[in-house]
Image (cartoon, rainbow, N blue to C red; front, side, top):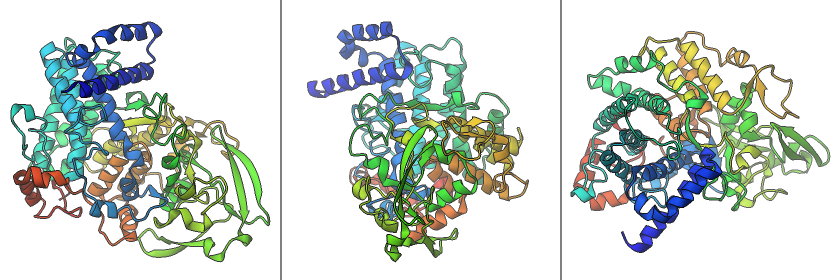
Length: 589
């Protein structure tokens, strides 16, 4: 490594140390001790695993959580459609990354200074921590390797994993492991990590460097078990066809208590919010604000939220800021929701062009239909992805962010414009997802622990709680509210939400899980639709806007076809001979 690169690395790690200080609320005296160490930072970073562990946790979480603003996944999951854009499904078919993409960075290569090279940095943690005897650091690194490995294999199919980042050992052209081998390897790694962390004599995970769980081994164990359960749910059918029933292993996890079951167990990082680089993805403190305004929720998402009068809508989204109105003249009003104030400009529909009052959309089967504008709408999503900024006469409205906005359509709430907030996290996995996985597994007969209703209702409750929605008496309206309160029991009893013991329960579980992963984990929402086909309307509508079938995967990066051709060719053969987004990987066959 040359001097310039080394200095870049040191500056990056000092920044990451500052992140950990802010994330953990480290005291002034602790900060002084951090400052005292800077004289030997160059030596320490490359000598001690704890520094590399901090780097790894931040880089893995920040990249994984970036799915919140991933446009192709957002449309594939039918959450968002971007202004100044078009059919994002096409992005799966006509765009091939130059390198392996783990949310826009190469997980195999890089120094870590730009967030890339997560697997490389994690391997450094493993080697350093093993030499030190800090095996708890090794366990944490293996858990994070499984996060990255799962992301890559569920994005591409067969990927390099067992031979990954072994260039210094002479493995310059790593083989692509079959997806089955990748999963089996991850199961083994997670089991080993859990055993290490359960050993009271295992050393490592210092609280001032473990920015995820502050050195709490129990929470790492819960994360590992929950991640394993997620991966087993994703691959259950494929392994069953291959002769291995994962049910017994899933039952062992489900019948115990060592899995994520409370918001305090969630694996995610809060952003410090001190600079643009360490702030929440859609913040408006720095920059153009395009990321905040350009994503518009789909009509199909908003319709679901409105149908359930879902309290999450009032936390995540703002009301329409410039609705077409039945009022004869423009009327402005200020309303408050969840403690945030919004100025609403009502524009008389009589002054609008007739063409602005209607747009093309889809029914739930993906058939073309007309979608008239609802006058004085408070909550209204975009019905199609074409020129979203211009729909319903949304171009050039006062207060808009140019081509990257449309104030006729619902946008993000002021909460999501903040640089930092406990609700805005770089999420790896949360307890509500685990609850819905348990509900699915119980309903399908993979496990016998618990009840479908118990797991399902708990998933909804946990999703509400992570957004700081309080359980109590629901007000007549949230207009004027300082916080969002709903009766959780009444919500789970609503038509369309309440389970009834029929096959339709799987659809309800999928729908509520889809709503719960909005913003928090859109990568998993995309994977879940691919493996379950639920909610059914997601795929039908998403692919109806273009000429492409629903994408099952991303194409392999360009550099593999040229630099690692023999192994690339073998991986493509396993897909059926063509490297196409429509090709189904092993877990989906």
